[in-house]
Image 1: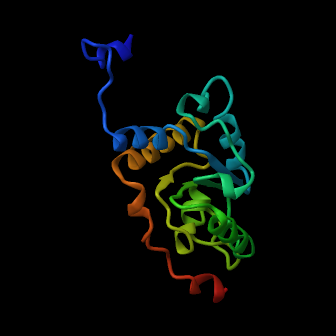
Image 2 (image 1 turned 90 degrees about the vertical axis):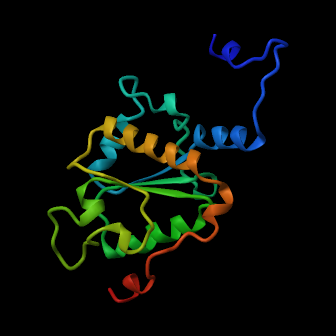
Length: 173
């Protein structure tokens, strides 16, 4: 029924190529799940029938970075693990986005120690921060909708020159 409302009298849909491409890009985000600790359980729960991440076109969680465009980092990131997360991020094709899921990922959480990264924004460009310890699955869906809105507002060519954080942060620790 919604399709008929956009048809002309002759049954022709009018749009631009940019609008069709933006719609398809924002409704087919494929996440790369980086479940490092307890937040990963809540990330998995987002796929169950109660929350149903499939409604947003993101049920295809790929475990190969070359097929993903959204990295969901869920859990405590240590400096030893940060190198792995950064390497996987670098293997993802452009344009790509990052969700920092949970307090530990966003700011180190309760772990104020020498081996825990105090926020992944020190080595990755984060697009959406998810609050909570652990954040609920519906919060993850809200973050996914924010990413979709961001994708819909931007053109693919704008992501070529995305600023990255200083790479010396990982080299010093």
